[in-house]
Image 1 (cartoon, rainbow, N blue to C red):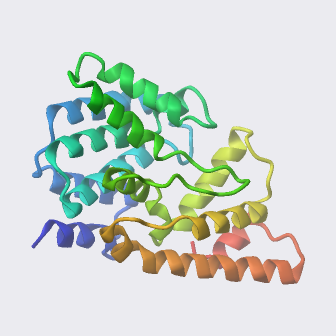
Image 2 (tube, helix red, strand yellow; image 1 turned 135 degrees about the horizontal axis):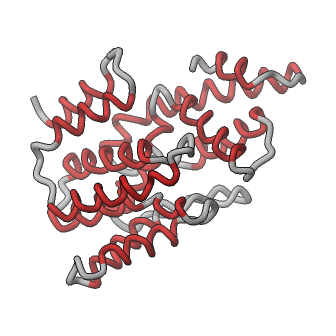
Length: 254
């Protein structure tokens, strides 16, 4: 059975395991695919660093490891070279480390943290710059236009697809609710949950998966999620009532 088939079996089975347990199973399976000592060291460092944001409902170590695993998988499927894979896996691990210092527009901070850690470990400045560039490709767009960064190569395509993978998953709205809780908990938004879902609709509409693998595996569910979201928003607008967060989530079958 191929890597792709095994990965799909683990992530898309009707398993009673939690999403975190599923990730551990996938990681245990994929450890047979050689990973450099530098990537392993980065994973250990980032895991310790992100302990300071364990109270974040979404942008925490679980999300980072999810992006890391999805990045690793997409690299195998898309035929990425050894050096490129090492760089993008490091970028995936560091892409949200900026949250340890600042919440909004944290990607540049994460790139700086990655550079500081890599200094003395990489002898190639161009590769450090590549790690920084890949991290910056995950920059979240402004709500004024919702224009995502346009990838310039396959590495930027992979990191975006991995970071936005939740849009094409069956538990997408559970994760979306976690983001809503996070931005409210830390005081960065006063939107009602319904208003937040309308912004979520813009994200679903404006973001498009790039890689062949992500398109084939995620587009169908992403479109289903968007259709459900639009139905709920339309119903709420027609009713002209303020429905509770719990009721809306129930409608989305979370």
